[in-house]
Length: 403
Image (cartoon, rainbow, N blue to C red; front, top):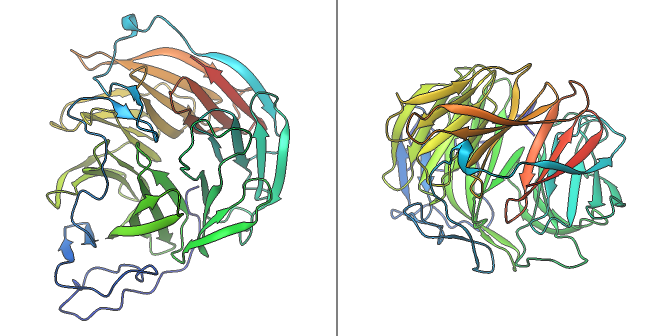
């Protein structure tokens, strides 16, 4: 969930010789050793970074070829180039509608084995856990330390099980009080993983890295922390801390974990950083109200959603494609590596599915999926094999789609 309020976090405790004056990074997370000469600090035009460990931080999937692997090591799919519509014989079909009977369902996720889903309404800050097969409500829990329309986020913890059987995975909750692991069925706090204020969470494609963000209002600045995930411990080890002079509304890590893309407010720009070389690759204008960003699996394209969809080449950012026929702004952009398609959810009741021509790079709308009327469609999430899609909407429902 994107931030609407928050207080500035105090700066790191560091001497002037250790930290650039421009940087205003957050306090060291618990368990981080004092700053040593081997810790890299580098300052770019729009951001300051502190690398607590040298890149790479995890054994990420390669974008050079080979199969992306699930948490058990099994090959899931080839992260190859974008596919044309002609190569996609199947379509997405509605499989189930789950009636939540609450609005503002902005945070939701499908478990990797597609057996469970949770959803949180910003209105009553209550987490509801559902069985996908039966549609049955399994649990209903008011989230701790979260107020109506206050910044927070939640994701399933990347437990080493596919499938997970009858027990749903735990849930990682990010709030102003920090990161906590909670039990999906009861909301009981299992572990306090970090005191860092957090309003937005994303896992890398291989689920080995977690990126957590917080923003300061009205200063409109942001901090990102990248953690290495130890699923069975559970433990989070911070490996990179970043401070931005503008508010970061969304970000994405590439498949290899080498590239970080961010969208800024109020400038409405997209910037891509090379975390290995510690440089900014490029910064280009993004659509107004840019709210979501995603990489293609082969790291060759970046999609940004706002008042329109814009897809930008990583190698040549002047090369891009756009689609603007939306009834309202985009909330989420996602790439599906199994089908080679881009997905958008928007505030006009629609989920749009796009293919991209591999020669002309033109975007083609191949399918439109609908919730009721023009109710906002919020989050999109896929199963591990990316053949089941979950969407949540202001029409007070979750919808399950199958490919």
